[in-house]
Image (cartoon, rainbow, N blue to C red):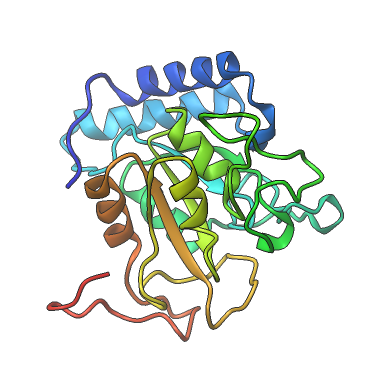
Length: 234
């Protein structure tokens, strides 16, 4: 269940940018949106809410692992030589943005989502949220630490063999891996297409589950995507 938050999207985005700057954790991020760009989108969300539009994630700050496409930010998969400019959001990202979530930036990862330690990146090793001398876990290291430090409300990772659950466990947060196919992987750099899952990080289970349910559902561009049965869980 998603609970309402105090303050509008502009106020929450401004506070998030200030927290990110004060955190002194540059290794979490591969790219961040500019302040002007983020606040412009936040203002549009506030205007929609003021007009009566229902946005279940209005003003929620979202980080996205950098093997998942976000229009306007490069996708690197942790490899600068691989970087490309996506022309559209990944389906999972688009569905959360349509619900009012604000993408703050793209997070560091074990290169090509291959690893479980969070240190295998030319962008730097992502330090554990609570003990910087220890590993953060991977491959979705930046996303997990961004949530654990309270820099964002939600973050997307991927999980092929533990990458969305290991860093959640090592940083004391919730990591939800939906069953394969429930969240389309359109716009995700594949590690193993038939096994890859988009995962959600949050500080409570209700928020993580709600975000996962908003992303779930078939996508014509992903032939393995499917509908969540009414009597089944994620």
